[in-house]
Image (cartoon, rainbow, N blue to C red; front, top):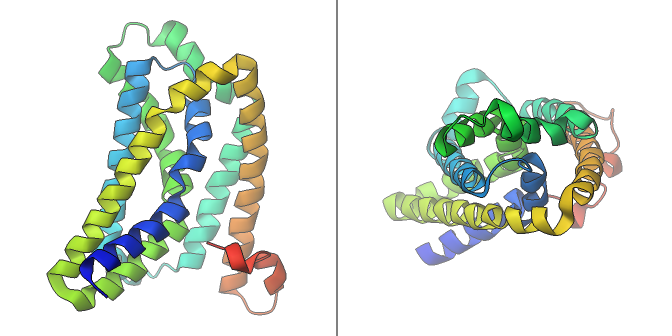
Length: 233
């Protein structure tokens, strides 16, 4: 396969796993009180974080997991716990009011850059990891890194290009979050947050089920761990 083919295949797989389009409503729900300039900066920060972490795992993932003795299943379970916590918070009032309260008073004296940094710090975990950069994305990066290693430096460059392209799509998708916020309004965003919170809780439980299923033998039925094998990530 050509280097372009490697990059395209890697990009498609990573795009499907990260799903930047599907993350847009959640990003909009997480930043309702941020000003448009601050939201744009947050989008830049998160896309840069995605690029940096995916690049890090691309070059060191296999060695890092082996060094610490961490399996992907253990990562799935830990990620599921973090996602479940986020889902519970989203179904409460504090999630939708956190950024609005900051915008109305507590952070009014901050510059756009300082406000964006404070918001970004709150979103790194679990929004950045493991929601955006989860076990599936990290697994794909490690697998493709191992495959591209056979092609030498050109293969590595193709992988880096694919990761950069996906990060750019994350940035472009998140920059459109302001349109969603304006279209739905406060009540609409509240409804979206509650529904997404429930979905995240279910997704978190599924992460834990898959992790436990992979780490054990015969305790969890395969049809429960992978209910839709044709569409599983």
